[in-house]
Length: 362
Ligand SMILES: [Zn+2]
Image 1 (cartoon, rainbow, N blue to C red):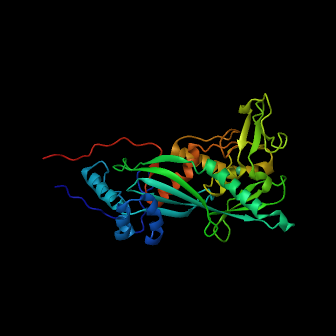
Image 2 (image 1 turned 120 degrees about the vertical axis):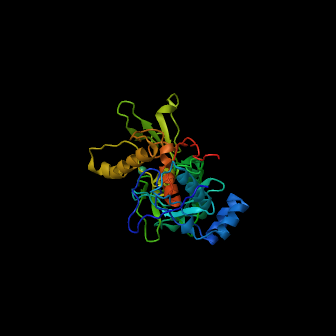
Image 3 (image 1 turned 90 degrees about the horizontal axis):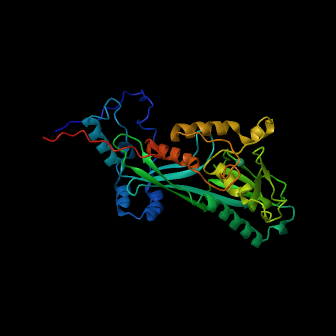
């Protein structure tokens, strides 16, 4: 028989931060908030686990840093921790990236191995000088356009994360992103202005007093814009008005030279997931540099490198945070970080090879 035990680290001494050690976990779900979630998960085991779960602290996977994870003791301790971990849902609310951007909820269900991101947005209409311009049918059309723009990019995002901890390698998280309009408890608020096509759309990454991030957009920005890439300078030019409205690529032109940018989806990428701009601008220009938020990009680049092992570049291309409408693997970084925060475990994009259990038969 193999004996093993958990020895807590001395009080006041945090275990060293290294790969394979747990992160600080987020809070577990309460019964009330778990009920709507489990309807989606549709698993009776989840119901039982949530209703009967032990104190959440005792279930948190905290491996003993003094135990060799390759030893039999480490192996059996991990099996115990995995069993405890599977007794509940793990969640983080109003997650914000280390860059100070973003606002969303995430919940991981170890039984179904699904992780769900929830982003709720509210739409408000700024008071126009002439109240008649916001007729009900125009508001409805604006809401529909906002929903279409966001869902076509962010509502389709899928991905899989794998647990990186020793003996937890089989644990995966299938990502689903659910975005709904919700005026009562939004993560971000989209304010639509009736001020024509001259005002710039932008997202405010700081949260307001109601804990919401904000997006400011003019009615003209609701329709997709067209950008043309100059092959010489690799700069992008907004040619929407030159092409007419709605924009149409000129006959005989190479459509590859034209990128479609759903402006709302781009701004939503700042306010919801918390991603920075990745397009190229005139870096020598102070105003442009501020607009690009170079500091946030640098932090993002560093985080992607640390967690995903590659370095995103500033480029004018089809990525949604550049001038296009495509969400990429790099755009999953916020959800990966939130999953790590919610579960207290290390996760990554790649499945680690299975290890051989160090158990000797008699
Ligand atoms: Zn932007």
